[in-house]
Length: 167
Image (cartoon, rainbow, N blue to C red; front, side, top):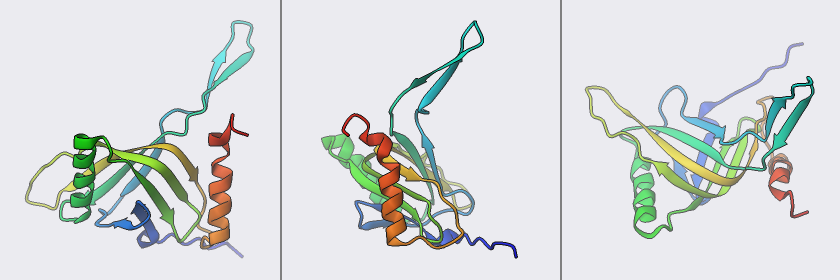
């Protein structure tokens, strides 16, 4: 019997400061998360051996794509303005797929780049770039819905690289 995996785009949530939901996502890719620095850089030595350098960086870039009519654009703009004026516009962010086990969390995030403001005869999209420091990530599957226990285990295991040097 084949396994059945369910992905439900509406079950992907983005929360700012744990309470402000972001909504108004576009069709297609609406959230993307990239690690800024890969942990290992490999180098081939003249004798044919390999060496690798390790960098402990838990920094990520999160891109959120909203349609131009989304009220969340106003919230993100206000956070960017607060940061520009006071340098205190940092916030925690959570991205969670409740139909699976994907999970991303950062305590210290900020708006890195404003989207291009464009107007056209169609509904435009706004791509918000958010930098996330000391983040944890679990890239999981959609074989079953995530549970609180699984979420806690995923966060704990994903935080291990960030704890290097502390333990």
